[in-house]
Image (cartoon, rainbow, N blue to C red; front, side, top):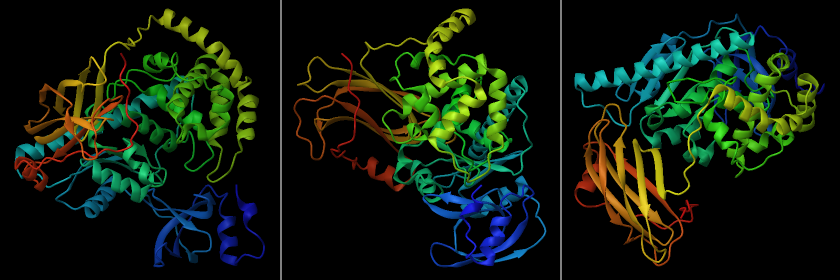
Length: 512
């Protein structure tokens, strides 16, 4: 706990706040504080904890809907004690979301304790058939959340991990528009400009699951984030507690599989990560345990997830009793506590009775034995085919194949696109762009719901803005979409297709 930061010279108000930090029975009071814009805000909330957040001391005020309002120290002006409120119901939460997003652009389905909602990019066409498609889509998303709950509870029972009941209802918000998703993520998370690279996330602040609709064709990425939601809402860990990143990512990767067809859990071999473990860059498991930064913003962060899966799998299968004791220790950690890399490492060794480096030395042997014993078939790694894949961008799945006999000549591109919108036909503009500043493009004026269209082969020989042509080394695919009767769709239909601009983005290098 961070009570030691409160000095005797501070006001009686701050002293009172600090005294409540260790109280597990949160008292909901009326707080008056000054927000970032200088506006005075009065709200009903419980004091969840106080400590450093985004580099400064802040108080966490827990709202009845589970939203965690972070208020900088010194900004709270008044606190009035009152009786503890009841958490919102899913019905009350859905009413609030409907008011927030508007009846034209929001539809929802109740799958207690979840509110599954879709934020539309544009109003629907008003037909009963389209409304039925939206309803069917939301019910499918609700079943996914229910399946995640069941598989998580099954795993907990098998491992003797004690779970708690949900304290709050939670929302699963699905954004039809990528632009709306990124705007919302920038406003409600710490992702900032990085929101463009995120497909889905669980918010520790709002306690909600936020998704791009393009990720809901299979729910592969949402599954990972939904496990984070389960872990932090069933008593395994507390929100804002100093939980090691390797554990959070290790348990989440353990459930990854075939999206809504959840057919794996952390005690079983995940064929995807088992395969990647053979080609991932070597990271010392001691550093993976100690350094949370290994999972953030580094070119090695993707490899860190692979190692986290392996480390977690080794503990679950080789040290199950110690693993459960370690989880009990994590569950006891309080919000806003701190833990240094050294403390994180030493705690691992003390409770689990093994050093992570020792686990790493045995991992490959144990993995191969388990693969043979369980007769697991790993997917093939084919590095001979020259192809591009850009999955789930702008409501489309696109697979492109590039053929080239010389880097001096533009590659020949062909492939297919599938509209993955569950309730709208869509218009698409697809480009394959080379680092020489040339591109190939396809304009698909109307692709039906769930329909797949073959794109005829063409050379990437159009010149981009700022492009010079000549020898090329790398290429990438981009997809833009438009909704029927939108202004963008009308512009494209009139022949005003966007011309890509040369950028310095990192692109994929083809194999030969």
